Image 1 (cartoon, rainbow, N blue to C red):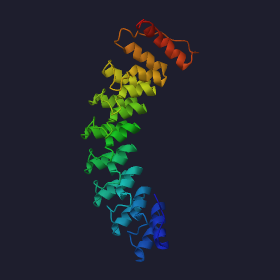
Image 2 (image 1 turned 90 degrees about the vertical axis):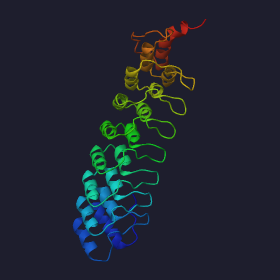
Image 3 (image 1 turned 90 degrees about the horizontal axis):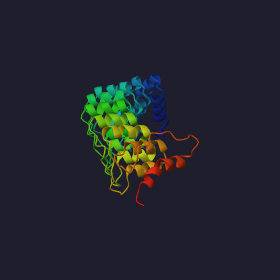
Image 4 (image 1 turned 60 degrees about the horizontal axis):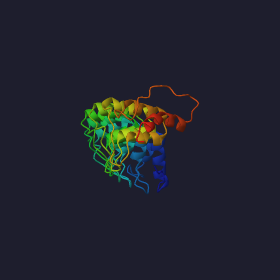
Length: 298
């Protein structure tokens, strides 16, 4: 956030708002020489600064002095958006008392709910949902609040959003679903919650990859385990690869061994034995795959 001001008095108002100096802020506003809605060249207001900084008393003073609660700066951010981004639930409640809107969007489609979900501010999410925020808000690329929370691993927020009607399988425009993103990031608890709420384990992106393939490729062993609990099968993907290909390319021998053990393919044997600890990653994977290679076509 920019704090560049246009006049010395405006500069002082912004400084007081940022530091939480209520006495100075009141003195400046009561002088009649500076407006409560003074802005910098980017449209940032003192109310936005105070909200971003979490100074409840300064926010209230600015509102009582006539500050525009729903004014949007150049990027589209409002005081509510900035308070939600920083997790200031008390400031959010105050802004709602004086008419803050949950409908204002940033240039990329962001709302107070999407940003609070992204940063995992569950208390703010609760306040926003109780004041009319829509769980179906989405960024310009189609990412919803649920998607952003899944990407960052915020389990509590995910439960809140799902309980409020968020669509568990709603994907971005590129076909990436919340489950796929959580699997890629290695958030096993998020993956578990999404699966329990009906996430499609085998949904694929435009590139043909699934959540299971991506977790295997990234070597997220615990995520692969959760995904296999819901379905032990894994066949050929649209891109011509299998999940086992992904695990091998990722180079994680534990994941390779897990998949070999879970496979219903008779050419892929069960490998429950422990391998020597001094082997390199590639040596371990080759040891694991050798029986299936030997059992293949001659």
